[in-house]
Amino acid sequence: MNNKKTKILFLITQTDSGGAQKYVFDLATNLDKEKFEIEIAVGQGKDELWLQKLKNQGIKIWRLKQVVRAINPLRDFLSSFELFNLFEKSKPDIIHLNSSKIGSTGAVIGWFYKKIYNKNLKIIYTAHGFVFNEPMNYFKRKFYLWSEKISGFCKDKIICVSEHDKITALNHHTAYHKKFITIHNGIDLEKINFLEKNEALNKLNSKFNLPNSKFIIGTIANLFPVASNSGLSSKHQNILCTMKGIEYLIQAAKILSNKFDNLIFIVIGEGSQKKLLEKEIKKLNLENNFFLVGTLENASQYLPAFDIFCLPSIKEGFPYTPIEALSAGLPIVASQVGGILEIIEPDVNGILVQPKKPREFANAIEKLINNPELRNKFKKNNLEKVKQFSLKKMIKETEKIYCS
Image (tube, rainbow, N blue to C red; front, side, top):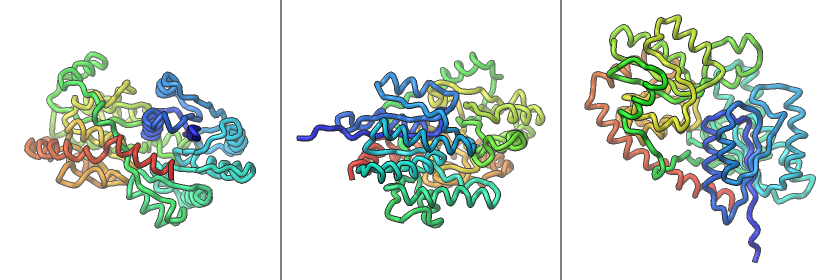
């Protein structure tokens, strides 16, 4: 009887907290330990907390010195050799790639490693949203699209976290259609732990000295630029264009501040665009209404402090934060992009608006402020809707891919 465990090597571009990092953490710590041996390889970043949590659970971590989020021809070239060397040392049975950057390079290098050593290696890629869907010029879009197409040949299975992304990939012919499967992200509904509303408010007030307010609009979001602008030049770095569209929420806050004097907006999260966002807040005289409170450990526990959850993203895969907001029973206003359409049903459990439309966001928020019955309806429906997105379901469906 062969009791050898299947070794899975997860690869991810950076350490900074986000949906892809949470996804890897949840899989790595919840897969059947009797069946699978887990290792994780990760590139650069500032957030080491989630890695330390993985190490504390006995998971081996490989650090990749040449893998970075921004396009860097020299380091991208050197990362190919680094990855090949990693595969030689780790000798995985399954390579599970996460995020577009390492997803393309890792698939191609994994395929060469597989052929050179005649390995029975499975290459799996989870697409947490496709970069070619982001706003960018024609040539950049073609570059990212062809990166997906070339690497798609090398992948055995492509997990899309939303049906929207799966359809997008099929329409662009990024890989053979039988390689695709949709598995929604899930959260542990049994372990999610929220603070009571007053306790959450008191903790936020004690840390950040927030003004007294009757109504709080909040979100949890990384303050990163769209990937196509990340790290390319100083000119790009000075362009305010966050993936989560926080600049549009700031503009919506300005519109609402002219109608209400009891609103504050809170954004939990960090990122390279924080200083530019702070300048925008100051420019619009919103220093007493709009607060970027930075990273908070276990950020979702503070959701009950909010009266409305907002996610004004310009591009999404299948984000975790609105699922957590469902579980907290919050009414949601979100952009009509990506997998959000599979979480929010308009006027049933939230309001969807077009991205980059601050006035539409302001109108949707105002509608909820003035209609407590609608907020209660969304709360009731959200507590039911969230049952569709359980971690157990995500783990079970992913294990099937590993074992097929």
